[in-house]
Length: 359
Image 1: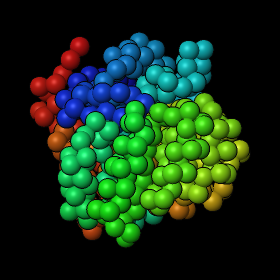
Image 2: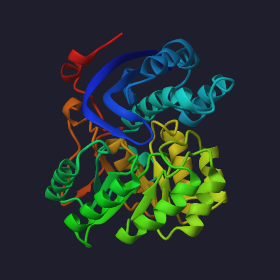
Image 3: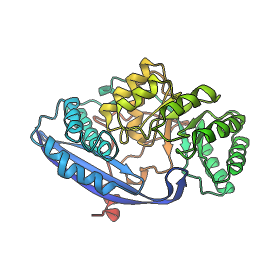
Image 4: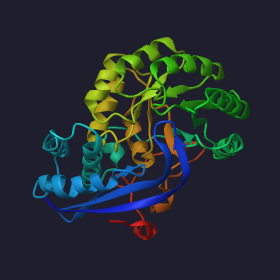
């Protein structure tokens, strides 16, 4: 039986960064969860890019925790449904998805601790190395700074790199992507990410021009609500369209798959509403023979992508939590593996977080 749920809230400083959809970024919010049941404690978390974290924590403390305390912890699927339905009127995505995710992650961690199994085994996957790519939030960087960042990715052995596009002057995007392609050569995969910054017309025209640099995928070119627009891009552009980090439920993914509106399905167990719905989404991808990748959530996604039939890449994000973890994820020869500890294997270093605690 679930006996106690506690949360904490932190504001973590970032190197000044930015992208076309979210603007300038200098803070990451982290909401951590501890869920106690039967002498064990499951750990979960949610994150934001500087706004909304207090609301996520309030939803957990005031609305979701009362739905879980006193319930049996074992049926994680049923508890996810209980939370989803409990916030149905104000939810079905957004802040509700983030809040549910933090608790769902803690429940899966607790299940792993209780059964003595790592998350990858609970997810039905087999532990294996997953290729990783270096990812920057680098739209404001001058060209020389962008190239230095990419050189750092290459030095770590990543077989792929991703850069942001969506500058006000599109010719700068063309110049920057071409410069990165010259730097990395033809043997490194190059992803480009517009962060929802374009209209459909712009995406068609600009995506066609950037195709000259042979991008491995074009990510989030337009707003996620425009599924028909994504379907048109998927039909008419030569590179795959990648999407998933801004989708908040399996139903949203289901529509994208049904309308053939994506070429690479990206998971994020925080923004997607938890591990429970993410596993449902991965099963959809398997049935549709879609390649999969991840957004942020490096440590959790190493487990979950092993439940995918075709996991092509894990994102090693610029906003890595490494300095706040007891055991940061290890990259070996440009690849990562899931941990073999029971549960998620993800534990925050509370002393490292302490200076950033906030109300």
